[in-house]
Image: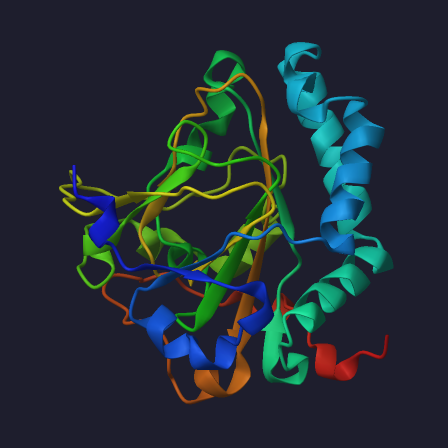
Length: 281
């Protein structure tokens, strides 16, 4: 195993955060972590929704409900939050707290992830563990991801990056992905199990693997071009997290971003992102 101390993972302070000074580093593969707990309405609204739909101790609800019931409750939770104007306003306030110039970015709807334990894992969840780049799903090479877990993250319940593949191609089937067909099939996190999920098509031989280590409600920031995969959750509780994808408008128009080594997907998700320069909160 590669020595994780030598990897380019940089710890940041929330108070001194400035994405404008970090974008070039993100586009060349650096990972950034804010380990101080983030207190914001976005996280609080998710916690409240989890209490509503999964009652007390939502992280243990998977042991009390059938897999179908658990999946249905989380689907209802997502539908309620994603359609709520408050969810959008909370996203605006989250990035405002990071002093992000919101008029310069497109911002996608924050997505709620729920990774159940291996004991209760459904065969239908197999695509969630595929090795992939987000860019294979019609995501821009300029896209930057913010990932916020609601529990402490380790190798036992997190995900990993294959850092030596950031600028190295791997055989994959992203050429079969069409964003418009994906949307017509329900889009991200729909219940349609017949959607196409791109993944690698050859053996992975990585010698530079980073397993995410992050405290609850910290923030991990990385390029969408990173090759990564979800680890099986071998703990006794569900891993809940939020991920938010953003794209700097000028960088996109100037074709600045991570190098494209093997993304052949068709279409782009930018058209469906929020443009807060047109909003008035």
